[in-house]
Image 1 (cartoon, rainbow, N blue to C red):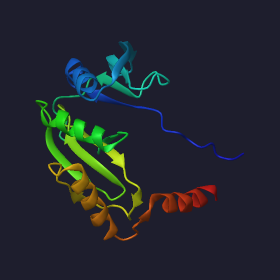
Image 2 (image 1 turned 90 degrees about the vertical axis):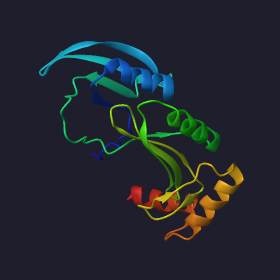
Image 3 (image 1 turned 180 degrees about the vertical axis):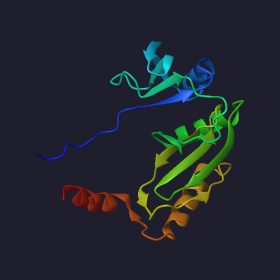
Image 4 (image 1 turned 30 degrees about the vertical axis):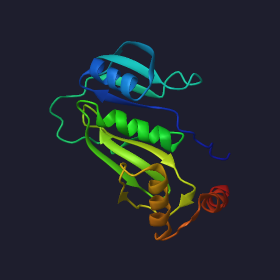
Length: 183
């Protein structure tokens, strides 16, 4: 029997201050609470908030109470959210830049995406990104100046991507990846 193809569905993570994190993910990032409740687990009672931005998905994120205050290392590398267009990325950059508790805001180009990274109020690294029509070999990260006008920023993004190894239209890269996945 062939191995089934997996499709990413949702993720959950422990938080220290459930109400504060729900507020941030709903008010700033635009998710909606679809459900909430408490559950007895082998580690004790956990409060859960289910969040979604898609009516077809009961939840895309689960916030769970119980993250210890004194954990010295956050094992979450990043939580990434795609935005549809550059106007949306600009607006999200504006929102997080004006949000108390958000830190380490870092707009960058990866060549294949334009991203805004930041730390949410509990220090989880978030990436907001939009795809570009190009592919470049990864990893690649160049700081991006969000103060540039749209046209100038797009010209810079294409010029900087074009100098990177592997630069080509993303559709060429996707076609090659599709062949690789079909094997």
